[in-house]
Amino acid sequence: MFRDLSLLLLLFVLSLLLASSILRGVESHEESGEWKCESESEIRVESDFKPGLITLDGHADDWKDIDGSHFSLLPALDPDSENEFKGGNLILKSVHDGHDVFFLLQVDGDYAYSKGESNKCPSVALMFQIGDNATYHNMGGCTEHSTSCTNKTCKGHEVDIMHFSIGNAIPGRLYGGNPLDNRDGNGGDRFGHLVDLYSWNPHCRYLDGTGPSGSANDSSAQNDWKGAWWHSSFTVHSGFVEDESPYAENGKKGTYFYEFSRPLRTMDHLQQDVQFTIGGSSKMSVAFWYPVDGKPWHGSGHYSVNCDWVPIDISLGGTLNDKLGNTGSSSSWSIASAFSLIISVAALCVSVFVSYRVFHPKSVAFTPMENL
Image (cartoon, rainbow, N blue to C red; front, side):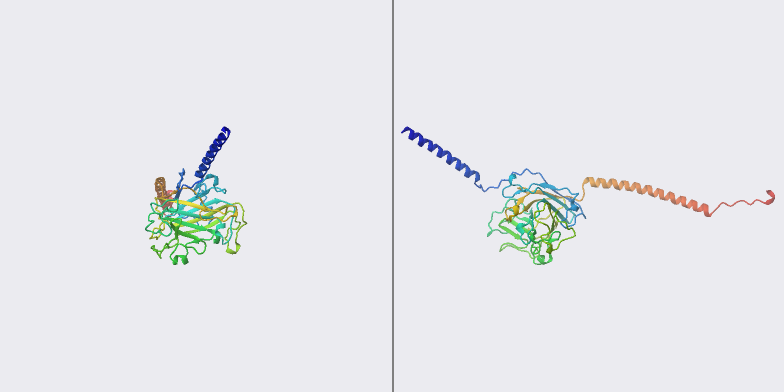
């Protein structure tokens, strides 16, 4: 009898331990619903003033002397280093010329291209904070649903997005804003899908100039972005045409380059574009999609450079050191100019003297023959 009681007690204890283990396992895999970001990144993207330097063609040669920011690419929904993109880091560079701002995204990755199937081709997006309350997480962070989000219910949560899916884009060719789509008053791109969007959250995302029913739209809206892409495995540099797709052999080792530009200020009237200020700062992020192992990517399955906003500084045209250097150069130039003037005057005097001596020789006194 005691043996049976001991056996029952042992079974009871084991069942409690098993139940406790199961509960701990459930809790450890349960979604809390609360976003946690433990970013320790102190990287700031610097957009220096470099006028007349960048040609928007997808090639990175003109960026070689521009410093870039290096980011690990982690899954946006689960930023765990174990799931880091295997191709390597993303390098982000930026400059401006006082009118337009330029971006270069550089990512190592085997060549993958399938014409007309964008989710089988690497894709990129830039996102910028517009509203003061707009968060990186949930693309603005407005808590309204797709049926209730408007420019009033989600005011302050606006983010600006540029998305480039290259499935219909020829390498080295320019895409983005074009007369046909801009005439229709929206941020679309019917040719290469380099589109200009805004968002309040992932379920409330629209082309510039459009929105949910009841929202104020603007027929003057347009796609302000332009861009091109390239891959280092290409052997042709003079340019491709559509008939040459897929342009290279899939699986070739190399590096993707994405190059973009946009005016610092736009004609946006509806809080759908970020407005950059020279000498000011903005907040941005970068997303990257890649068909890992040849499998098509899906919308939320992208990598990101950080789990929070990354600051970007739009630099002034020159620093104090530049101005001091210019002052020093100006002083040196003034001294050199004065010295040159003195030499010139001296040379002129010598020339006049020589000319006078040549054309006005001294007269010789007459001496009579009888005095010789």
